[in-house]
Length: 246
Image 1 (cartoon, helix red, strand yellow):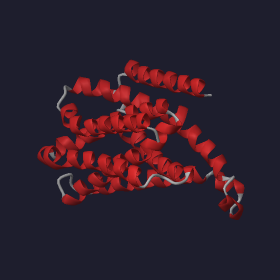
Image 2 (tube, helix red, strand yellow):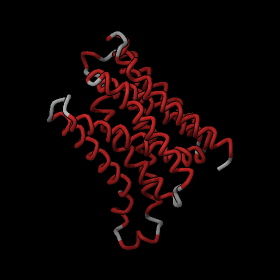
Image 3 (cartoon, helix red, strand yellow):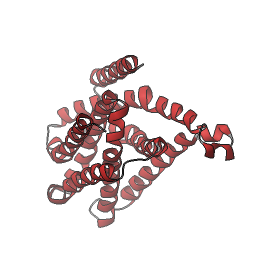
Image 4 (cartoon, one colour):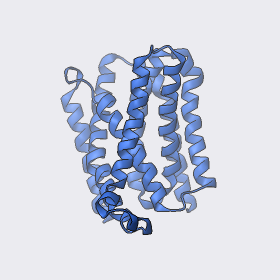
């Protein structure tokens, strides 16, 4: 990677780390403001999933069928490989979420489950970011916007449930996960595109789950114009990036 590419990757990683640090402040905003942010963020996440993430999984599946390993598996199954990986990611994050809801929010088990979920998302993001920048800086920026909004919206519930722990421990755990992921990418970069594809698919599965389970506010609390605005703006930006990059 070139120095400018690494500079952008570091800047995007810092932006996500800042989202971890600011999540508590989002949770203290007026309820109406939080609802507007959730509507815009949910709309942007939905657009990213359908306009970019799912098509990327489909094209990545076609590339998998060209690998030597694909000769040992039916082509249809091989091409579905990244979708299966995304499904596993969704199930893993959903399982953590269910286990958390089964216990009391103040228990150590629940708290640690949330830490694992938030930390793994940030670590995988930071690890894949340098490679993503080299393939398309525009998508890297938009992905950071979507994931940053997710962090702000998801972390606020933990900040409200455990204000002291979040202030002194949780947010720094997320920042540390970003730093570790970026450092690992520098020291041990992905040697093959398939590694990047699998990690991105796993992260995408988690994003799918959290988008439809957490980021979309209930119908009674959704500000429809803001939601549609988030969908429209993100979709236009992604389509513009696709046209420019083609």
